[in-house]
Image 1 (cartoon, rainbow over the protein chains, first blue to last red):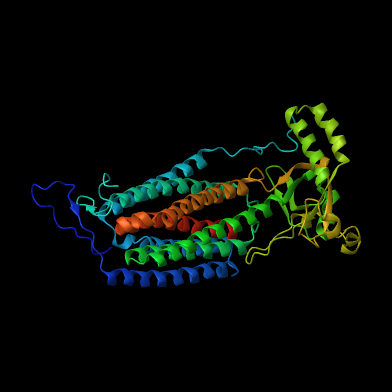
Image 2 (image 1 turned 135 degrees about the vertical axis):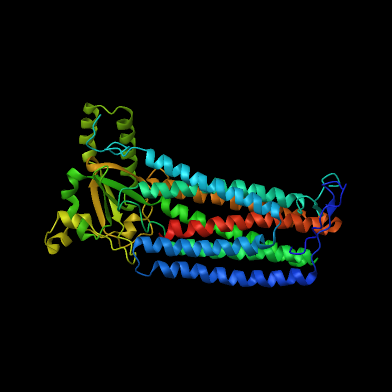
Length: 131
Length: 340
């Protein structure tokens, strides 16, 4: 994957010219070994997630630790299993844009949340509310 | 297949074969789909009154096993793809077969978990009636949560008598249709005779997060007298009724007239279960979809492999990329739903 040919476009060439993708046997096998190591790391991280949930932190501490481990695992999966580490610029651009939109999505939900008035009663109707 | 360009070689402008670009665009839309649900989770949790967000409602063991199963299936899909790149068809079949077995295993564990929750029951006792039940609940070491918005006390467990429950459900529907004061009074009288017997859950043991029983503030009675009133859950009697498998949990009986609302752990039970079923259900649909695609490559891929093995390898690569996303989503779902 790391050896994609990507020469500068010759003058007058069609922008859609085909480019051969070539990976050597050695590269493929090396990549497989790397993925196996990542796999073991992911298993260890999963055990750590559960082990950390037994440590008597307060709830904020639990949330920080669990999400930090989950984020580390996610980074490993994306970089190595999805071989994002050796991707093309186009994909980096798409995913950067996606992250921006996902962040906007969270901000929008946050805005809806702060905008929502705190009701003095339960939305289901409290037992004393009556008809 | 001759008509579709760039299945093996890359376009010069993107440097990618088309399917890879396509699948990454699809993954971007998936990030937005699950991102919306994750943000919903965050704000549902932040919006819940303090101390009311359910903790320890899911058993972490099946979730933990499923995490391992998905991570393992992620590596097997890579091994299957690598086998194709190295032109080892038999090995591809083996690793892809194992991937599919993992997918089926994941779904079986998920079904087991859903079924367990569908048999769990909870009810909210009105604040005005709680004193009646406080001694019993304290003696039973029941997990009690106070909900300040509705001014109710929530207890959960397994229902002992399903027949009573059906009658109660029927009456509840009547109340829902015509909530006039007269009807409410009429049915409340009837409902008082009906009691839900619940083999109650004990508080979850979460280190660093000790459970504070709201009833202890209300009651300080002698425990010796309380103990007498508690009947033990009878396994033999419960067989064939709704509550099975939850042996040795003390049973408390609550009059329907004292209950604000009650129900099984369905999505409608509370915000936690609503988001739990939504997120894990959508994730499960992705597991099913991914298995269908990967299964197609396994069972119907031999012809393409003979004609153009690199094309087949690329197909498996993009299918694998989707499969890794499914794994990725679960990596976050496991801690936020099972452990936090």
